Image (cartoon, rainbow, N blue to C red; front, top):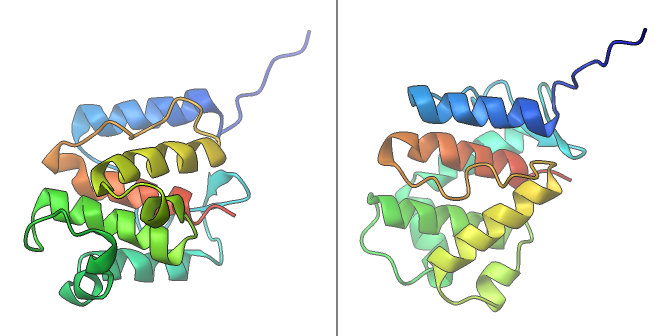
Length: 152
């Protein structure tokens, strides 16, 4: 009798990890250990350095000043909405999700759409963190977005 193995990157496992993040307000997708490559979350990938730098840039004023032209609907840097706008701009400018800057002019709509499509691209068929906006999960959410954004 064959026993089915559970793939560590299956939608079920990813959903459980997401649920864990929501439940305990902690995200295991840390900059040092996890990245996204070849359609799945994995560790030790060469893209991790670029992803880490993007995440660092994401929370800097320099980054916001550089990319504010793509998202002009948000208040001063430091607010939750602005940081989501910055994540959106990062995807548009650095990761090729050009529908963010060329099709949707409303950055909030754009970011939600981009996150959904990028997560589908990375194998999370349930949409993952698309609807999470809780401040406590902001960094966790953005980290997951960056992981999936760099999925090639």
